[in-house]
Every structure is written in C-alpha cells, then in structure tokens.
Image (cartoon, rainbow, N blue to C red; front, side, top):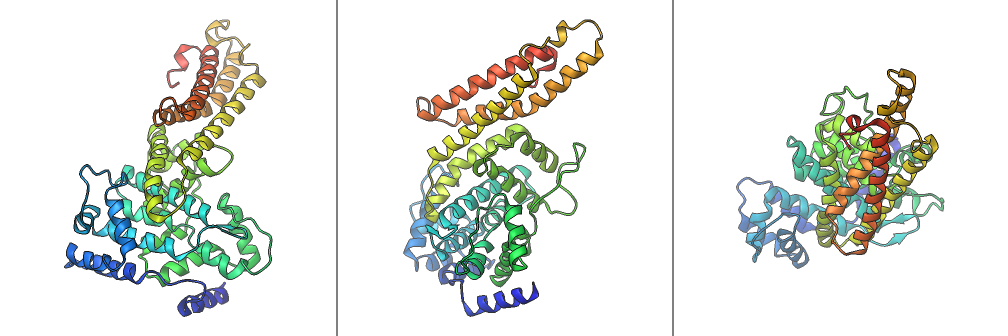
Length: 401
C-alpha cells in the first residue's frame, strides 16, 4: 500500500496518467475563494475559455438553477450561479474534460460519468432536504466519489491484459477485487488524487464511506456517529442511484435506510429520484455526457414491473387470494390471525414501496407517451395487489396503502 501510494504520487506529480486540469478552471477556483474578488474579476478569467463561457451561461439558464428570467451576459450568469457554485461547476466541467469518453477495454467512460452525475444530482437534492449539508459540496463530492477509478484503470489495468468487469455496482465487489489484486483500491487512489488537487477535507471524505450499516428501526435519524452527515448523504445518493443501475429495485430497503439515516419519508426519496431525471439532463449537457431520459425512465419502469411480478408470485405462493380475511376469522383464533398478519406484513412493505414510487414516476411522465402507457399497466397491477392485501387484512389494517 505504501509503495503504491508513493509510486502514484510520483506519477501524479510528474503528470503521468493524469492530464492537467484546465488552467482557467484552476485560476477560477483560486479567485472565487478570494473574499475581495468581484463578479467582473471572474468574468475576465472565464472569457479566456470560450467553451467554458458558453457552458456556464447555459447552466445559468438551466432548470438546474430554476431561473425565471434569462441571464444574457457572463456577469449576470456569474451573479446568478454564485461564487461557490461557479467554482465547483468550473472544476466539474474541467474534470470531465480531463478524461476521455467512449469505451476503452473494460472501462466505459460514458457510463462512468452518467452514474457519477446521477449520484451528484441526487446528493445535491438530499442535501437540500437535510439542510445541514452544503448542496454544492454534496454535488461535487457525489461527482468525484469514484474519480480514482479513472487513474486506477490507467495505471494498473489498461495494459495489464487482465479480463475484469469495472462495473461500479456492486461497488463492494469491485473494491474487494482491486485490493486483492493490487493491494489498494480506487478509493485509495481517489483520495491521493483529491489531496494532490488540494480539495478540502469534507470532499476528501467522500472516498471513505462505502457502506453504512443500519442497526435497526430504533436508530436515530442523522446516521451513525462514525460518519459525517455529508458522508451519510453521499451513501444515500449512491444507494438511490442503484435503483437505476442494478437489476433489483430494492426500494423497500432504500426507504428504510432513508428514514433511519436521514429522517426522510417515502415521498421525499421517491420525489428525489424522479426529480433527478430532469436535473441530470441539464447538467449532462454542460458536461457533454450522453443522456437519454426516455431510455432511463423505461429501464426504471421495467424494474418496477419486475418487482411487482415478484410480489405477485409471492402472493400466489402464499395462496393469499384464497385465504380468509382477518374480519371473517372465527373470534380470537390467534394462530391463524398471526399467520395472516405475517403474510400481510411480508407483502405489504415492498408493495407500498413499489406502488408509491410508480405513482410518483407517473406524475412526471408526459400523458399519451409510450412511457405513460407502460406506467398505466404497472399502476393497475399495483392496485390489484393492494386490493388482494386489503381483503386479506381487512380495511382497518390497510390505511397505509
């Protein structure tokens, strides 16, 4: 580990394997942190990079900032974006331009940036919910969470001839393989890189959290003491993005963690994921990352449909459609009542999670579109299963549906 760290630092310092960040972005960060700097000072720097100028002006007028009147000049854009956000967005754009796109062997750069963008945007939305975490700090931390993989691939894997999957999820499997093969993982490299670039400690801490184990339903909101609130937000951003990029939805578990770690309800987390689609689309344009909103929506709906199919199979497996309801049971037959309650409980939570999420998703879809037709089928199946469950436990036990 120590040998690898020294070797990587030497290569970073010599510029090997890590193209330089934009000089304009570096200067912009330096000036933006100066309390005496003016908007005009920043404009004079930005004007030296026409591409950066155009992209920041577009960002100032995007849905990401939810503006009403357009910014027509760079100075207006600087004022609207704000110094802190401008510094972070300039760095983000520069980082994106530092590395290639397309696919090189097992490294899919396009997918890497797409996943990173979703995490960044979701982290920013969650930070706004939590309020005690700076949203822009959460955004850039989410964007850089796996940045070390780019250099790790270049230094250790690209010319090694090893056949390996570099899928970011499940992250634990990738990190474990890296440590086994090379004695360190790409999160270690990420921290070395960010320290080399002189990023502040809160952003460096994004490299230190992979899993937060939830102890149980009595855990207080706000996460475990071992993790900062920013790290907890980043963990939940990664977990939320898994809904988009892993085969299983895992919505029920995600909702449990959101409530226990950050005190967020089902509705807030569902709306966070749904809102991310529009915001990612805007930021993706500024970073020149390919984004297909309709394709991602269809993929998400397919996962919801699969989850409902699994619940439906479970219902049939229990024979729930043929079981008596609690209200029709002989008086005080506790054994049968407890069995029915156990069946209902096992079905209810995943069903509420998937059905509620599908309804949130439906509200964001254009009526009459192909997506709208698909989500209608999903909602009908969710309603049918909820009806079965309502019949099983009786009206008094189904108010949460």
